[in-house]
Image 1: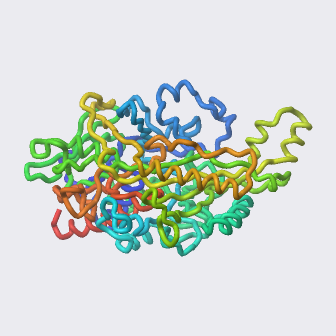
Image 2 (image 1 turned 90 degrees about the vertical axis):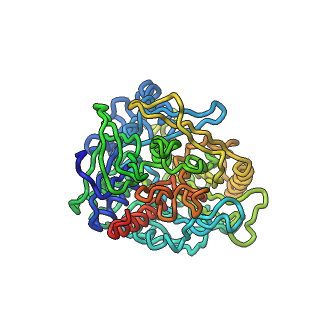
Image 3 (image 1 turned 60 degrees about the vertical axis):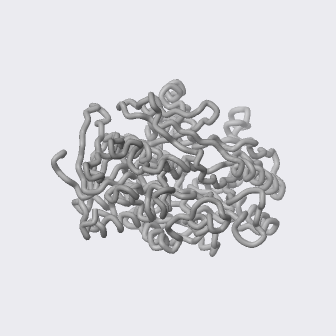
Length: 562
């Protein structure tokens, strides 16, 4: 394998790497993909149709094992007795941070990355994100606009399937939608109240779940356990959608359990290949390629660049001006607000199982009288309204016929709402290599230095006030007020930045096509390239950017420019 020279080496098999591989191989390019983790086998690893009594620990999990091996990962809602196999062992994958700046790094190392258990929320960015600096004067604009990415959004959505409703909002561009899912009874009540009182739209969420068959994949059957895998491939994940498309070309080669340590650079300053360590045997190996694409996830791709040190690149590749690692972002969130809707308490069961909720799109600091002078950028609200049948049953005392009658006759109806806001890109949120600590394969780990700034804290106050106003307007009972504090940095699992795009090599790592300024045959296509992140989930935009970069790479390869 070491003697073969591939057209392109792609590091990472998740949302970004899958699209790069699909697009390149379909254009005649031979691709070698390296994935740090193992493949997942549905019959062994998927648990969406498993009942608690079929699990060894009845769904409560071996808490001692989870505490011992996954003390960070288990803080994610999806890491439990059913799906902890999709998350890393924290002892094998350490990282460090200052004691007063905790960071929560959730990782999934397997073929498919985190696309097995992502929340599937899919929003387009607009020029409120791409040209944010032009709107409010803070930071830098992206070197691309919405018009540059719009055809790639179209391409991604047409292939993977996004369900949603057409709303015509400038701050949240419409996608090429499959039929939308339905709002629940509680959400329909809330929609009428919220739209009348605040003038905000409340709409069904936009999700990468199929509502009709598409490209040989059946529609979602609404088991509502998407974080546990999907036997029917009814939501997007790369092993079911993009990787098979790449494999069908005959030009795709996948090596799993390949833990990449660094990019191999030649004497002319170009990428010559990649060095990796076999995950199970810990044998060191190298592969060669004409072009290297890092799609290993935001912080992993940056770690690889920082570890790619040599005499020519003493501070890592792409770090000639000390920008690499800086401008780390993750969304801010206020959670746990809500209560019950007494008018909807009923003995009639509402159909359950829909794998999405509702969203109230961002309005603050967008258009019209929405300006808030206390902070920059904005936030959106989301949640769901549903009957709490199982929680109600488990908390109701008694047994026998009397117990059953209590459970059936008065099913409470809950309504939850949270707010998610934008994190400004700041130079003092950054990552570096830890000078002492290494992972299980001897590779230096990251030291992550990140915290919420004054703008995020000011925004949090407005988020909290609005959440309270929504709860009041809905006249909820048994209320849970919103949290007083923002989530710990990293908890949203939307980390972006650290190798951002830009026009000026002195203030950015990549150009408009994800190409490292100082190394023309090296690219970074995941969330590391983001200049801003808005308040929207980044995955759909990561995929669109990856497809656009792949088009550029294929064209440059055909011209002999790489």
